[in-house]
Amino acid sequence: APEECVVVEDAAAGVMAGLAAGCKVIAVNAPDDTPGIENVDFELTTLEVLLVESNEQGVTVSLR
Image (cartoon, rainbow, N blue to C red; front, top):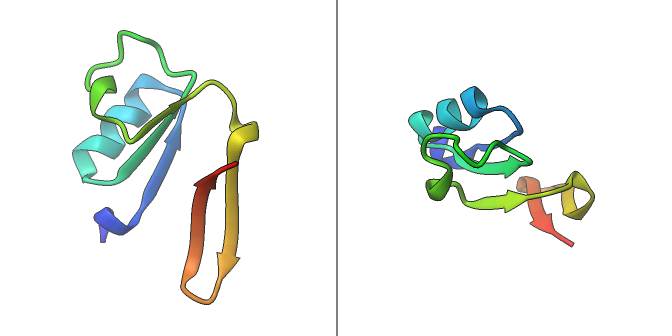
């Protein structure tokens, strides 16, 4: 289900697609003029702060 997915994107088209699909969206250095950028869940300037871990529930995505 899309609401259980996380999209990590730097391209405007990817951010827009993730939002349209109903996913959680993390924009990384996406252009400021990306349509819908104000609706993303997080805006990051680097992937270094993103922590992705596998666990018994599946995958956890968090910020360091």
